[in-house]
Length: 170
Image (cartoon, rainbow, N blue to C red; front, side, top):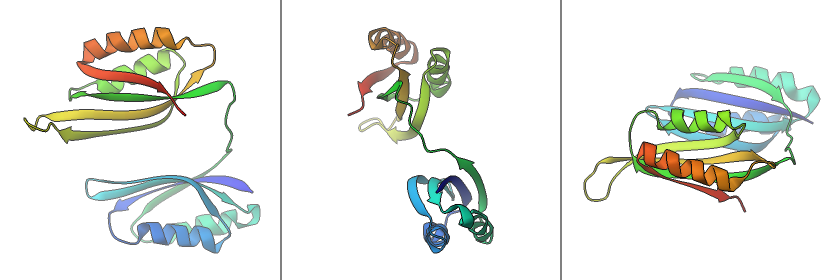
């Protein structure tokens, strides 16, 4: 079995997930991981599927036949590194420019890999002011001291005017 990453974007309409999953199933593939979201008037999908090696070309060719979608594929390896521990980052606060840039800069400078990140804006309950919400899963090298990260997060939290929490994944 091979692992294939599929990304698809296009104007949102009912049936996109059905069309893609039908192609994958028709050729013996299996969806292992996926993220799907409507953003603006478009729908975006990223998924990792396992496929029998001899069906790779047919799956890719058939996916390209789905109308009104920009579809890209890439072979990948599905591996987890045991030298890392997964942690959650939860951030909430007033929306201001640069939050993702400041946080991702800190993570990169400390060799911390982002495995998954989701952000959105929600109105505050009473005032309606937009609040920025970020949830991320990161991979910490086993030699990194989480206490020093928490100290740094406290500094970043004050700088950005947000609440920033690091939690070990279960």
